[in-house]
Amino acid sequence: MRKIFFTGAVLAASLLLGACGGPESPAPSAQAGHNAADVTFAQQMIPHHQQALEMAKMVPSRSSNPKVVDLAGRIDRAQDPEIRQMQGWLTAWGAAPASHSMPGGHEMSGDHTMTGMMSDADMKSLDAAKGPAFDRSWLDMMVKHHQGAVEMARTELAQGADAGAKALAQRIIDAQQAEIAEMQGLVKG
Image (cartoon, rainbow, N blue to C red; front, side, top):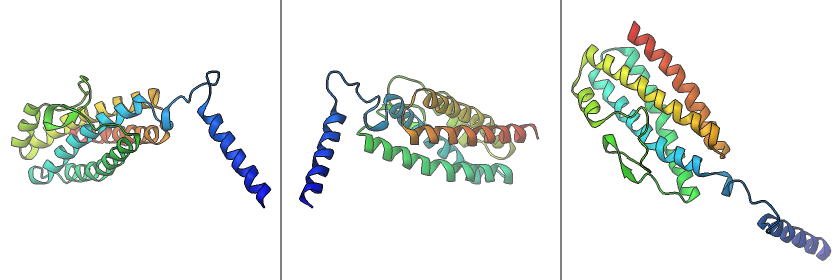
């Protein structure tokens, strides 16, 4: 029994030392399975999703179109859990949440202006609209907003390392491209 325990302990120590690597062994490509692109993706997608939720929550009191109300509800139900998931990743990765102010009172990291984000003026204009005028503005803005999210998700797929973050990016692309097509159909109809 002692020999098995000793052999197991030696094997574990060897694996640990081997994982540390020396000057001749290559370092892991990303610490803990993630890289800077994954962190940036989460830091930027969180406020992006938060603005989409803010926009979705405007719909029930301003729209009389059941299709727009349904779509806004689906956006709310999909993106809120994604925000919590990304916040969990940032905590697990030891990364700070977004750190600079941006339109809509949300924050983001770096000096990058996120594509698809609505300005404060856009949000105030949307907040003041009602009925069909609201629906049209909301659909136009949400299409642009979703296109921005798809672009950010494509960057994550191309540059990210974390399997979970890349899987979320693909889900965002799939869901939001379908919603873009649905919204464009609603605008035409």
